[in-house]
Image 1: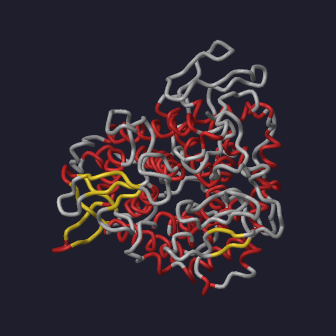
Image 2: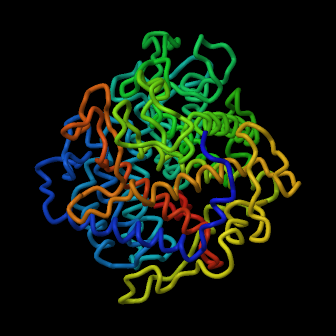
Image 3: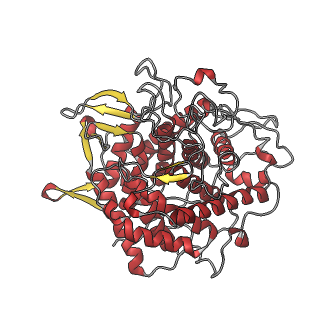
Length: 544
């Protein structure tokens, strides 16, 4: 179980936290430039490293958006214009093909990471962009969302899903995060046009896919099968392509259909947490007018998404070692040889860890905790989509975030009062958070802890683990940022060092990207600048 103690978190000063985030961004910048100097487009999108060098893997080009999205995130944290120009020019040069790719379920990965970040930066005036450039990014996002929504399988009961590259019978856990492409396109006013000019509402398909995932990917402890534990997930759900009936769970990258592949679990945690923020920003009539039998109101949709997010987050916290880093699958065959109550050793001889799953899950845990604080009335309300940060373009020549930092003063716990409402202040930093799945317990101070606290503490602890040794790569010759990630254990694609029995010491594009996204999110939440809102993927803009 992830360590729930607040005491060690209280030992991190604001200045130290700022340094950790700044160092992560600086190392990321070095890695991006190292790869950019030698990357040949003919080699395909980089996927994961072997002996510290990024390589491609012919499957789908689902990681290219991470490659060019990372420099945009570094620019947002660092202000160095090189990263903006590299990310912007590379998006224009290489990413157009991904906008109309009908063969994948990865639009949220490729296109939100590139066009989405550029549109957000332009719309909020963080970069200088003329109106036509901003409209270009918006048009790209509208196209991407509609194309993704067209890869659709209807199910009985007004359900349905965006099917995976395996075909119409296959629903992946991963795709819950590609709903970002539908959400952003919907906010921009896009619909999908089908036969006889039928107009398909993208929000409707987003909600249908979410409910189908909640029913068939996520377990709720209701006796679905012998391995039905609340919060665990299957990687894949298989349906009869003729009549749409559910047949069985499956997996592509996990150990078995009846164990939990932790990166798939992490996608679900973060996907539902982000969509909760998105749903919260909508008007009541936008949901109720869709006439979905299971979501008659916006409140019903939020309640369901929150139920799923909490269940999966609770499972993750319970089954992850104290430092927040999970093993690659909760049913991996040699886990019984390891002490799961101790921080992991990435070089252990029995089972690999997956730091990329931790980076994804940590952001989901933090977003979920903040959302719970919102609905309990303790936290700041998420802003409406048209009131995101409107910071000016960074001054010319600014290259370091520290030059204009707004994370300052006091103890770190006084800042965590914003990130973790209810956290004891610096005079009482010895409390502990409630067990996941409970509504709150009394800490050593005698006060009842908010229900959000375990998610916030687990997310922050995981973030701190990832942004330090042995996970953050400081090797100037290693092209990866986040070490000890795995891609496809069943296929044996991950590099195993000589003399070792399990893969370790390598990086992957999605791990590097999501570590940066996590760092940007924490930085934005802790900022005391009143103009800076927490980082979100979506923004409402003018229709094209």
